[in-house]
Every structure is written in structure tokens, then in C-alpha cells.
Length: 415
Image (cartoon, rainbow, N blue to C red; front, side, top):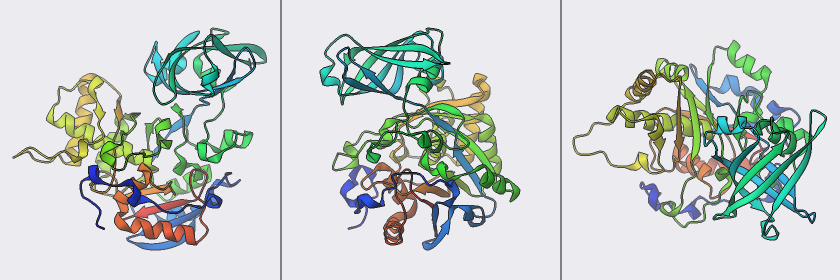
């Protein structure tokens, strides 16, 4: 049946394919760039390795990376009786909602967490003993309130109280590997579940398309004159959230914070109309969110910084009668004008953008990405970019031994 042009009516079951468990990569390759690369260029498929990427990019490409860094957000605490309670830190609540400020908080803070094995935690505190700089340290957690979907507000306190919460997580926490790997994190994961260019802490899942890049590959891109830029989207736990609704109208997209420097906005503006290639779905969603933020500012320049957000269905609203569509150039200029007016160096906003068939891309012409789970919003994004030919890409990958999901192989999608 034809795909509806209204994403509200999309049935997630139409984006199903059979993914054998044996095709999910359980471990990363020792050599990042040795991953395979499936190139889809105008529908033609070619098997390469990731080292071949620089020669496969369109001339004049600008690659945009997500430079978020994964935090060790899983805390395995103990009840007084010895039982383990897992606290998965999702987002800060108090005294700061800003992720950057929350990670620098000392002494105590409150976060919204997923609680594992919480049914046995009726009252009182749980604790985690750890070492910092060779000295004993203690993290204490108290459940403030139960919420939905296994989430709770958790009050944390720790000694030494002078430690920033970021240091507590680094010393006491575990990397939040994707749940489908069904294994604890290892010393190998500590290195391989981060991109080599990760810079800003805040993600609870890696932007996995970037895991294939090495310093040598980045140097080759520069030597070939391929421009690069960075955005920041702190990947949330919602990236693993399955679509449980029958149609997308009933599926709530999770919100994620984005930070984009003014220099990147100027780079995008100067680069047009040459191709922009997003490294990963998070980079792509950030870039396309910039358009919608800028379009809103172009229509209402007085919008405050606190109101900068992209809603799930914003791209699919009809234009008012006589209303002209905002061009990408005008949107980028509106963002720069906002920064100048507010004296800010970067756009800080949140996005719930859902990219699905029916979406029209404004800033992105191609995508580097891994192979995604069936019936996921990430697969909807790929389908929006490629159209029905996404099935040919996935059938080829399944039929030619490609490894899937976070530690799997990669693809370069050029529609």
C-alpha cells in the first residue's frame, strides 16, 4: 500500500523487517574504520569499508558531527539489606535543569531517573561506595516521588561534598549500553562507546554513526578539503523507546537538548547550496531543528530564548493563507539575528522533531548512519530520506552480512 503523506497516519507495522539476533553486533570491532560501509547513491548500492568514506562523499560536502559525550549514567546502588537498585539518570530537576550546570553541581542534586528493581525499595536510602582519587567516597540516594513508566525523582547527596556530580558519575557510574546488548559494560566499552571527537558531556546513549571515525580518517577528510562542523545534541534514553502505538499520531517523541554555536550557523549559511551530510540521525535532527527554530524566529523575532523549542508536529502544520514559506537562508539569518540581539554565542533549545515519510528536508542532503531497529523512529527518519528504497538498502545489508545496531556497520545514504 502507498505510504501516507500525513505522518500522523503512518502505521509503525509498515516499517517492520526481520532482524535475526545473530545480526546484532554484540561487541565493537577493534579497528573503528574497519567497519563495512554500504553506499546508497541515487538508489545504486555499493559495498565499501568505512575507510573508503572520504572518496565516496559528494564534492564540496560539509560533514556535521554531534560532539556530545556519553556520561556514565547507570548507578548500581545497594539497599541496607544488600539488594541492588539501579538508578539510570535521565535528566536534572534541581537545583538546575540545565545539564551543564547540573553536572557541575556539588554536594546534592535531584534527577529524574529510571529505577530498576525498585519494587523492593520501599523507603529509606540506598548507597553506593566508590573510590575517588584513591580515597573512599559515598553516594546516597532517596526516592522523592514515584512517577510513570518506572521513573522517579531521586535526591542524591555525596561525600566528599566538594565533588561535582560529573566526577561522581565518572567514578561511580557505568556506561548506559543499549538494552538490547544484554550485557554489562566493560573496559573496552569505556573507550569504544565514545566518538573520538566527543567533547561535551550529557548524552546517555552514543551518537553511534560517529563511532567509526578515527583521528587518521578525520585527518584524511581535512587533507581532501572536506569541511566539517559540530553541533551538540545530548542523546536521551528516549532514543531506545519503542513505538508502542499503532499510528504515529499516538506516539510521543522525547525531547532532547541541542546547542549550536553561532560559528556553525555562519558556516552553514556560507556553504549553501553545496551538500550538507549529517553524521548520524542526531546530527540530522539537530540541523533540521535549526531550520524550524529559525523559521519561527523569522515570523516572531521577539521569541525569547526560553521559548526556543521544536515540537513533534511543527513541520507538518499547514501554512496560513497568503503566508510564504521561510527559506533555509532566512531561517539561518534569523537565528544569527536572535543571537546578536540577545548577546548569546550559541542557540540552546530543545527538540521533539519527528522526521518521517512526508517530511521535506531543508538543510540536509545526505546521511551517514548505522542500521536501525525495526519499527523505530530512526527507521522512519531513514525512510523519509530514501523513500520506499529503504527496504532495498536493508535487504541488501541483511543479505550481505552487515552487522546491525549501535556497534554494527555503517551506511552512506545519498538520495
